[in-house]
Image (tube, rainbow, N blue to C red; front, side, top):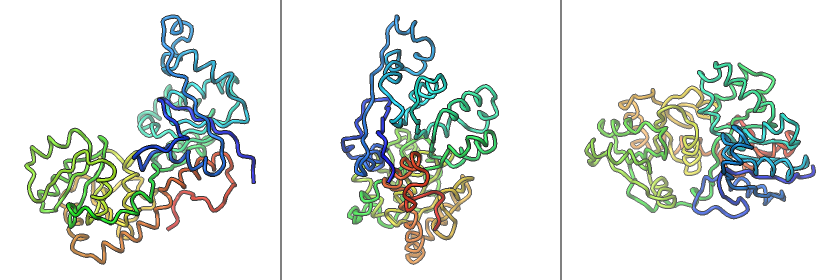
Length: 372
């Protein structure tokens, strides 16, 4: 068994991974807690933001851009040693730590969970030479970076093959047990398709339009835009809204529904992959719009989910009615999707961090892509 390094967590806000996060079944902190259970020593670093005119002048533009100030630079230079591994999910820390590594002031291995690179690195950015060079310098300073979108791997294979293997696709983690123990006691969503999401990457117009095609749809969200959209559409028996239901109630609503609908405005980054993990844990049929990187999630039309062309509300309604009316089909799709659940688990998330330290350690660990 290899020696387990000390893990230094750099956060962009006050948080403590050594304490159990409250009421958040998809928190990244739980993945760090899983490492603590495996015997890793985890320490928290949050020096606070030091801002003053003097430090602003001394620290210069880098300190101001990173938002931490000179105190953070000094802390990283003197508090870290090469036997520790730096783990961060915050872009400011990624920039500042990679810069110090380039200067030779920090020797630590840098491991990054950087979902933000999915939006910072679209096609037009990687073709911008100046920005691409900036990301290249960061990439070369990292030992590993895993992202919420498989398309990032494709970008790096094309533009920087020598660092492409450092970018590993890994979706948002889900606490499977939080959903698996639900008994569907909330009957408000029985016989209905639930469209779920919490961010602006959802195409809410589509499930509303699907309801106009006769599909019984419940919108489950805390997106502040949705109530107004529902009011304009005129909620009836085929369209209902569950707004800011909270984690427990939301889990009960999903456990009692007939199917889960995921309509994305861009792609499945961030909480889109969470929805797949939740559907897998609950064994629910999943209906979603056709994406260019869905195969990377282990999804296959007709086997463990159903696709519809993006923006095609009529087809989405047709597929929704199909699974609501065919119990055998719904059960088969849910059971097949459940085979992917370990890939979206907190334990799998921890496996990914651990693999960054030891690529060949624990061959039984969950590894992408799924092999269903």
